[in-house]
Image (cartoon, rainbow, N blue to C red; front, side, top):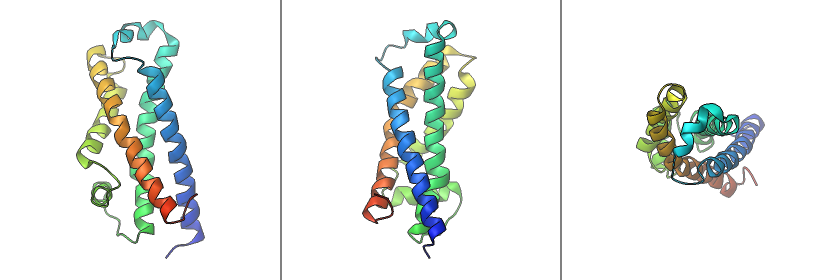
Length: 158
């Protein structure tokens, strides 16, 4: 049953996801101005560049967390779907057409952890993780758009 509290929670999460999607897109465009990663060698000496990398990693992870751990389960409840484990919920989201690829989502999850841990240890690994992260940003944004589109069509958000 739809309660005012459930609706308010979904609307609040939808607003957060909209902002997080925009911010991740902006940061991605600002950080990856070309496919050349030679700028990584300046990371230690360029605070602005370092902050952009931090912003990308943080925003990548936040959007994934907000979508996968918060908004998708709430929307499943609105759609009268039974909740399961996080993996079960993401599998339902894939079957319902909200999530383009569960396998890529899980890869993105592991990748986020690698980007955080490799940041100070191995620039070659960080380069590979950032490059793949950039490739997976559209997955996160498309998932957000799919879920937000459903909420708009159902009249839950404008």
